[in-house]
Image 1 (cartoon, rainbow, N blue to C red):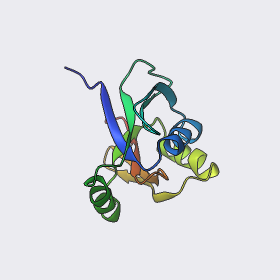
Image 2: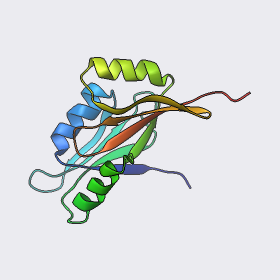
Image 3: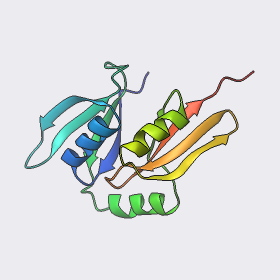
Image 4: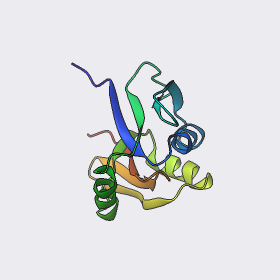
Length: 132
């Protein structure tokens, strides 16, 4: 068994697609219309085009709003993305105008930072450091 698709709820799929591709650097994998202004819309890492897909899912279900608001209020990321160098990625994204709610911080064998994806979610970036 392996993870095929995971997702985040987004306020606006097209805005999310722009952010996740143009700012974060993912590539669009699938875009299939599912009704008026709704798509099955996924992105993937350019380094793993056949890897796990991230579904940019509409946040229309009534439970999504309170759930996401609680996560954001508590500072809990909706997803975590691996990076090779958290500080360098933080600096690259800040230069693109991304707002971070947590700058890079060492937490044992990892360095993490948390950003606002502009679509209703907090997203963590995480650098796994080599253990000796």
